[in-house]
Image (cartoon, rainbow, N blue to C red; front, side, top):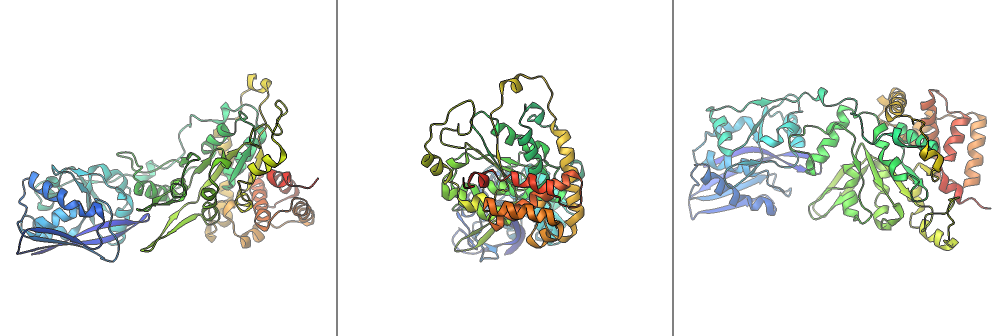
Length: 512
């Protein structure tokens, strides 16, 4: 006999439907799975047979053939355990086959018949809704993330037996719905607040501009100047996630298996801070079984790279594509995957190997060639993709010991939200991205028109600093953000002058 069960699988961060076909034939007892199953899928036959027996069902002594269609796409993971078990029960007459026609099922089975969570429940639920499937059955621990999908009956179960009772109508599983409106909103108070940062007014201003326009930022300064402390407070001034951003971020974390049990949605912008020993696959994704890397896990949030020159050069170079395009494309012999990776890069580094170059309190003993070698670990094309280069001086004792209260993150975030609102009003309907950092060249010409004085200032800056075309455009984007923070429609000379000041490494390369 033949039975069919609908299921789903994840490819990249998107899901596609899979038809699980189970055939029982006469012959010596055997269990074969076809349709390009990988190791975890093949091992499912042992889990399925043990779960069926320990749940009180009969394992048919026949030749069992399971086909996972479409057969041309490799199948990974343990999510096919539940649909395979249901298909065997339906094919052997222990479950009415017509009951399987209305549901899409996925989940991993334990040997006792318990259902265990799997990765990618949210994208699979979205794929089910897009295909017109009215109902999905999945492990109870995955219910919260799948239940944010509207227009779909999401039913969670803890055992295989509970699923079968639901399908036969003996004991129905309750449909769960999570109102996403209550999950997305203003972020809660962050313990890392700018109110704790003494002095460093210039750095706070630069971080505010970075948050308002989605600009990448590099902080240069001696050890102990507060670079890391400042960067870790950047998420506290970022605008709230929109529902669309929250869903996209949650899909990535769901596929990576990073959602906490019972977590429905990633409601705050992610902050990722990998160690400098990370590999290129760990940073942008990949591996034998491709998974999202830190760049994609930081999508819609912040990727913080501390001690930037300590990262291996070839690892940093793989960031060029996501910094420019907002995506990571992984090409393999069998397939090509694209992960979203639109993040704000915050990086920190010392100005020299000893860290004291330019520090008035400590003398730097690094020879000029050593400083040049240290900075050359960062390629010019990579630095061009970082909008803001800012020198962060050491904090004086009188500032550390002072009692004057600093501006809290909530006040800064209010200005950032207002600037982002102006950007959405300006180009929100044109598909140009959600922040000034993502403006294309054509949009720059339209939204960053300069008067004669502005053109003269920028012409001199390009000539003196030797800015590349990419750096020139980044100066314009920063100036546009500064104007938005000031509430002005036009980019004026003061905005351009401030933007040019945020190219510290370009100024450091000036002759004489």
